[in-house]
Amino acid sequence: MKNIKSIFFDLDGTLLNSLPDIDYGVKITLKKFNLPPVETNIVAKAMGRGVKNFINDILSKVKEDNNLEESYIKSIHNDFTTFYKDYYYSNCVKYGNLYDGVLEGLTKLKENNFDMYVLTNKPHNIAIETIKKLNIENYFISVIGDGMYDEIKPSKEIWQYIKRDFSVNSESSIMVGDGIPDYEFAKNNNMKIIIALYGITERDELLKFNAQYYSENFTDIINIILENK
Image 1 (cartoon, helix red, strand yellow):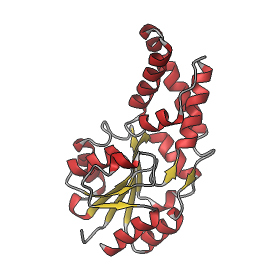
Image 2 (image 1 turned 120 degrees about the vertical axis):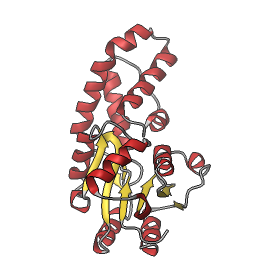
Image 3 (image 1 turned 180 degrees about the vertical axis):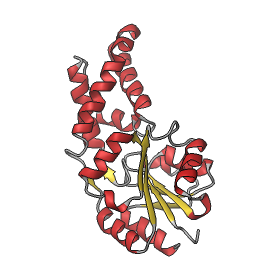
């Protein structure tokens, strides 16, 4: 895995523990629409596949648990999504924090002249706002979120757009993430990957994959990358 030049970081569960903010945003939105709350583990399982799938999963769970009519869920879907996205945009870093070692690690990688990107399935505008509120935007060449291109992880097509726009290649790039879409994205595009076991996705789910590397903390990630510079 030598000659790594470009690093693509997932955001939620890799750089940032965003679950507290996303969970609270879901609870506020459900309350706004007079719907009962869902448990935090349900929110965690719904994360990672883009906001459309996320909202679908949350509302499907609420419908199932409370015997609600499908027609009612459909009638509120668009307004529910808009309210959630607007609320979360304004409150994307209220309770969550960067994981231990992230600031120090990003600084070390920048000092070693790696090209760094955020590649997330979080809505693009919210991803940018999150990075700004965390004061880490200067570490990254670009923040690529859901909506910047027509596709999201794990699509092969999104990598074609990224290669075109940033002149990168899979041979000298690595994906770092804590989610199943991260692993599938790397696999689909013949890219190396480091899977973060400390994030939001259940550890047992991630250990099923044959990833090149697993990391227990962000310091592990930095050491792996520097060893393969």
